[in-house]
Image (cartoon, rainbow over all chains, first blue to last red; front, top):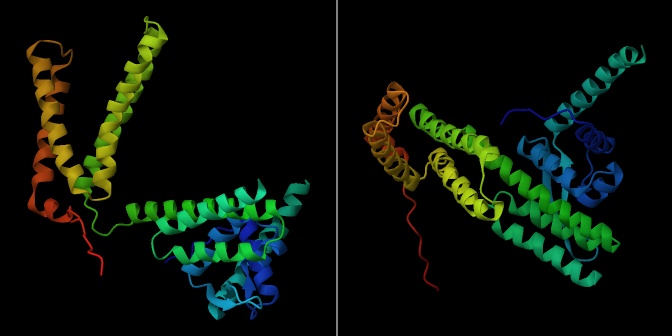
Length: 101
Length: 201
């Protein structure tokens, strides 16, 4: 599978959030609240990241005894996500003077 | 009212999950599991609705990818499918072009128009079937070509065809399609999916 992740602001927001605590596991709803992404936007991105092995998933039982799906960047995914976010920020930084003109 | 809508949206998501292929179902289950932890009716409702949209769009994306990146795809079959899709497009444009010339009252014309548009869609359905490797579409395309040859032949015989060369070209194309779709190598690509019957216990 190709690494053709689209550099959308939503993907950057999600990857930035996942990178903040890169080794920790995250819940879907928590990610949705923290990134302000709706489930209809969040999950397709999570699926794409998982398909390209940027993300690992697992089921865990919460304190209430209910199972929850959890997400974490893989070690390869962490490196790629850092590059991804960096490139996006760099292009934004380079574009800003152009826009200000 | 809220409770009913809550149940409806959860059931809708569950129905979509049941229809999904095995690789997508865990993602649906994941969205469903999160509902337990979402506070507020509307938050839950929009979460479920978003989940349904996410699953359906991902399913569509996967289908489109499998259509485009199918290793068994043959160029001749792809061209025949494209020809059928263009056929539908040409018919749709022709009928739509004629709409301003309709002199009948709309209540009379509408059923005929709907039937005509429906009939125009037939080659596109065959194109889709050919694209996904459905054997009935292959047989359908052959029958369609035979009927098309007979109609074009009659059209020429009665002197209705303003451009004989064009009608002849269409006959040649149809013969080529019949020949191509009947080749052994093509028949092998199109597999009939036998109906699997499972007896309980």
